[in-house]
Image 1 (tube, rainbow, N blue to C red):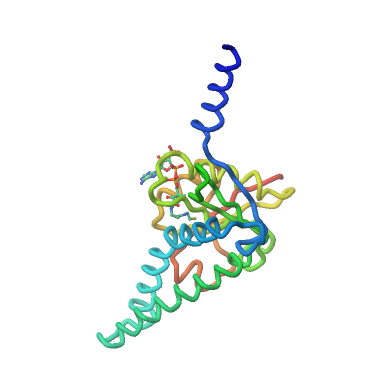
Image 2: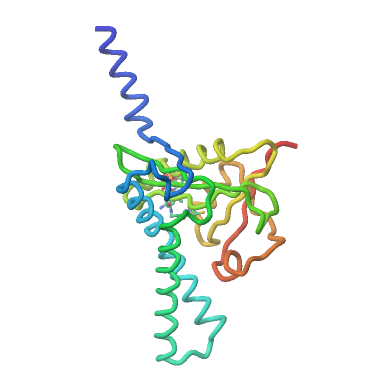
Length: 210
Ligand SMILES: CC(C)(COP(=O)(O)OP(=O)(O)OC[C@H]1O[C@@H](n2cnc3c(N)ncnc32)[C@H](O)[C@@H]1OP(=O)(O)O)[C@@H](O)C(=O)NCCC(=O)NCCS
């Protein structure tokens, strides 16, 4: 009887209350990664990021780069954006944004989210950057995003290196989530055009060590 109760409690605490499993791979082309997980991860990424990428790219091209656009040209710009998004999707299928590792998040054996991290030299000169924090739409609002970021903070931390990430300025949910876990918006000192200008992002930092 006691054993049965313990088993039920164990299932409740480890599976019902905390049903996520985190598996880290070297990249999305890793040999041990199952094809279905690979496809789900890439699809999850597209679902999480393509709509904003499309929106900001269109906005940038129409309002800033070519403000006097006539209708035929505007159609060309639209096609250009779609080509860009498709190209970046194909690149993602090979590696995962030059990542050194990607963590897939599974619930009931299905990939429902992901994140990855690597040392960043382009923007921050040596912080560890957390990228691609994503929960598929139908699983949002259940606390999984918060669990994923906590996991990322733990796994990505390296000695005293700061943790950084970029986030769309209009993405209040994500900004609040990161702020509640100790990240702060910081000024950008190096400005790769796409991240901060074209895509309207903030840089956020979680200071580690002294
Ligand atoms: C940002 C994201 C990861 C959050 O995932 P999630 O599983 O919905 O997050 P959680 O359920 O853990 O919620 C986190 C917090 O946001 C709040 N929240 C969640 N959805 C919300 C919504 N639609 N509106 C307002 N607040 C919301 C929750 O109440 C929670 O706050 P709390 O910790 O004070 O309770 C998810 O929305 C996502 O993948 N978005 C698309 C990709 C993206 O923007 N990634 C971040 C890029 S840097």
